[in-house]
Image (cartoon, rainbow, N blue to C red):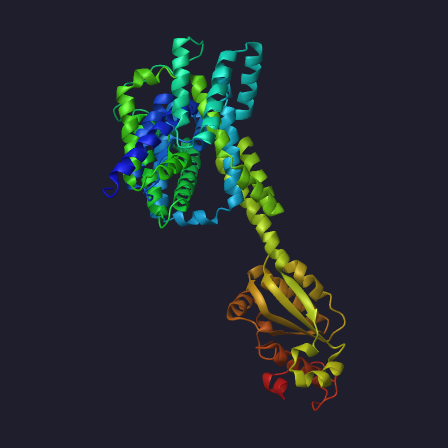
Length: 556
């Protein structure tokens, strides 16, 4: 923190200017009021900066968390939200102790993009009542609440609030496009507040704010309600972990040689969520937008994020009366513009064009985020992505019939091809032999009718699970009942173990399993000679004699 203090202090001040209207807006959107957003930005921002795993991360209230909190407020009230924050903090610390941070790398990019798109839509819809100048209707389903707000506006239009919100949106988007280094969110809020006071405009302000943070308290905690709040707390903790680690990864990508510690980041977010509710704050996460501003304005250490929290604390204690005059329509405009800027059209277009599966996962995750719940949306996205990935992997599995003579050395092919023709079938298996594709691959094997011996080349099988081994066992048993012997070539130790575990030891015994394809073909030839199918040095044997040749006989 002492290497580049000037740059960090300036970056922290810039982030605070950007974070102020967002903290106010997300506090109002959560249902606990603007003071809850400020308390979260101050307390959680400071603790996560000190104890988190990223030197560049900026934490506080976010739009994604607000989306989760709205139904909790509607069902359990403010006390339920604060209790959920405490429980989520405990769960995050438990995840850190369990070293669960590394599992974020398994979240596919289409799920993240769809999740972000869905959140942007939900944030925008949440701002509709304030942007229209109507009281927020009751309910926790954003689509239904938005529709009722529009109906109320149609009955009693309030064009002043609409104009103010649209002016803020236009100023933020157009200004950021022309002068990206200027914090137009605070400029737009200041201009809107002055206009509302000087003209004056008939728009609702934020309302009275306490001049400072409340004393720490556990008065809101209801032990009897802990059981019913556990499920919402799991959802909040999952979202906090996902968004914080994604934000830290974004910060790493914007710098050179910086890597965050995911488990320490979870620990820092856990402490932040334990402390914020004590001061009336809502659950917090790492904020991608504020973290990006911190990096772009020169932040290099934890001092920048800590400065952001200190500046917001000064504003809370010294400028509460001024902040209370900010119009709600102006904050709605800030969050509408933020929602628009969250959508990366280029990334969405790239995902949609990559593969059909990526496009499906993106759309499903976005729709689930909008219609259901954020955590459910991520789970659904992961399930769909996993199913499509399994289908793609299964399609890579192939079983191809190849020439028996081609398995022998060049000098032996000419004399061996003709006698073996019509009696030996050689199949080469490629790719994984697992539950998603084993039945399709081995269906052809069970229908073999033009051979007395089948050789399976297994050296190109990348993996085999219990389902694949059982299907192979059943197919071999069916061929054995029809008098068709099955030999294997190139089994690996891992495949042998799986076959042995499911009771397919018959495929592993001497005379059935060979190291190479030429040895297996030679063993098949010896078997055909012993059973009298081919003429050879071995005399015919009765039907109840051992059917397969030993390696020594195959070599001869």
